[in-house]
Image (tube, rainbow, N blue to C red; front, top):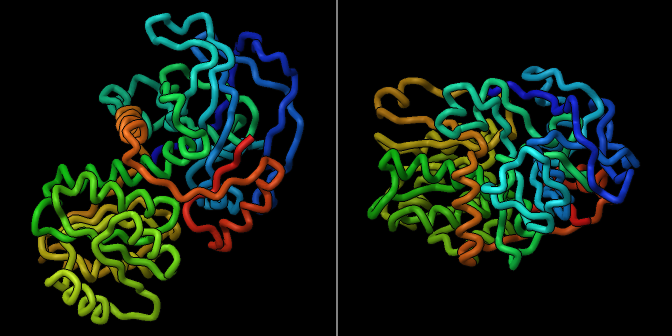
Length: 372
């Protein structure tokens, strides 16, 4: 896993906001809810843009960060301003941001979340989100649950002003992560006519994954798997071919339902948007010979799976981590063409601690988005 680095700035230039202080939801201690505070508006480096945040999506990884899930992977100094699904308006542009970049104050933008060092081999090919020295907004001093955030200009992407902030925000993670995963399955040859893809976990990521499976699947049959009937209803509304409720069912039960629905009892491709150990074990049991499995979910931490079927069936397991600037730009283009639908629960800044608890309890269908 890429190293998570805290986001702290040195030698900043003064900000141009008329405000001197801003609201921010900051975490001071693991296991404790974020504190709503007034803090100074951050300054920016000459190569940065100060973004006035208009909306920020809430992700399960925000809950995991509070609960200490990432502590074994990174030592992040406190305080941490939560929130990494960020959209807003350009407030100030640093003096070294080239005019050719095309930014103007007032532009509507989204923030690509994986900020690489720019020198490693992953950054050189554009995959900054897997840079060994990657920095993440929302995992350091600055994050999206604040009114302003300084962002390196190369990670700011202009968007169509017709698009709503509350719909743009989740596309920077929930709407980008499964997009990259589906692309991996497509490029590996796992999709196409007479293929069946299973989408496991119809939560914040899964509601987008089912749409990309139809958009990029080349005619593959799309089947949604989840425990929650309401979430499966959303998947059906978004165009999947079949839905299967996995609650209380064995692998054999699911194989029979799958065969009845599609004519085959296994899956040629799987994208797992939950990453829960029991679900992974169940899903892998349904993976076909030469099948491809892509995991983008992180609900669990470790899995115990049989090795022989992975080898004897020549199956391929893909890890896919968020996405790069190209992935996000492609998603924004689809959004501008009205090809992506959203299930969004809007809440206010003052409700950030409440929604952390609601997300932890699994009460939210779709994506929760804080809107200033």
